[in-house]
Structure formats: C-alpha cells, structure tokens
Image (cartoon, rainbow, N blue to C red; front, top):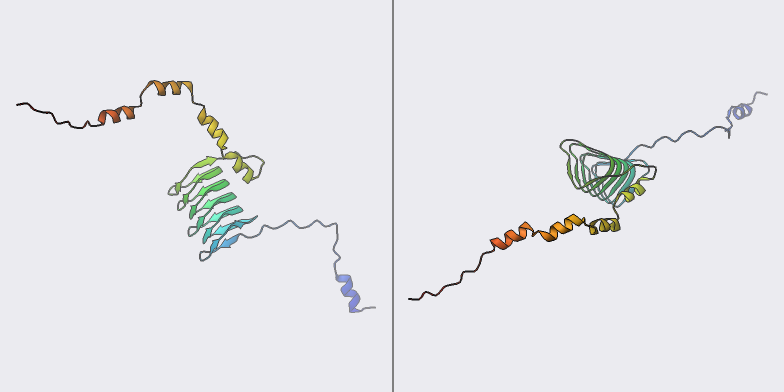
Length: 189
C-alpha cells in the first residue's frame, strides 16, 4: 500500500500539450575578443561585439565595434555602433559613430549620429525605411546606372546654349598666357 514506486510515479508531472512554449530568450552577444583575428565572412541573427580584427563581410542584427576593433569589409546590420576602425561600406538602419570612430567608406543609413571627434571619409546616403528587409532597401537606395546615364545625358537647353556660345575662361586664359617663342631679328648696319 505505501510503496515507494507508486509515490514516485504519482509525483512525476505529465507534460501537457496545451501549455504554450516559453518565449525564446535573446541570446547573449557573440564576442570577438581583442586578441582574435578573423579572415572570412560573419553571419548572425543576433548581436556581435567586435574588439578584435575582421577581414571580411559582416551581416547581423546588432553590431558593436569596440575601440580596439578593426573591420575591413562590408557591414550590413539593423543597428551599428562604431567606436573603432572600419574600412568598407556600412548599410544599416541606425548608425552611430562615437568620438573615437575611424570610418573609411560609404554609409547607407536611415538614422545617422556622429559624435564630435569621429573620423569619416566617404559618402553618407539616407535610405528610405519601409517594410522591406534591409538588404532590399539598401539595394533600392543605390542608383541604377541607366537612371544616372539618362539624367546625365539630358542637359538643359540653356546650359547647352551658354556653353556653346561662350568660350571657357580657362581656355582663354591658357591661350593668352602661352608665351610666344622669341624670333631673332636681323639688324642691318
């Protein structure tokens, strides 16, 4: 009547199929330490914190580039905070360049914040935020060569007429400044 086997069997909870699964906990960030150098591309659905060096492209949701970090390659993320060095294009909805950031490359962004002291050599282009994924939005934001060619090929009539009617000042100056060779003259005695 009082056996241990029956009590253990009765104490075990039976999993119910009606219980909803627990929500997924966000995973901790992937950390690339100061003494680590990666050559190759990185892809993550979560957060990456870089304190070391990466030579390759990076795709992730959130990217934090530390002061000692060096990234050489294209970066695509929803949010990027740069404290270190980046050499390559950045595509992100939100970009923050901290005061010690050093970026050489273009930035395609929706929100951009640059602190005093940050270094940026490249172009910044705002991309339109909509419901499409970041890769599609960034691709749409880049001008197509046919569009650029069509815009450049259609000069305004007034500009064409003015250019043809007036000589360029640089050409006129170059012609006037051109020295004539000295020709010795005969002197008759």
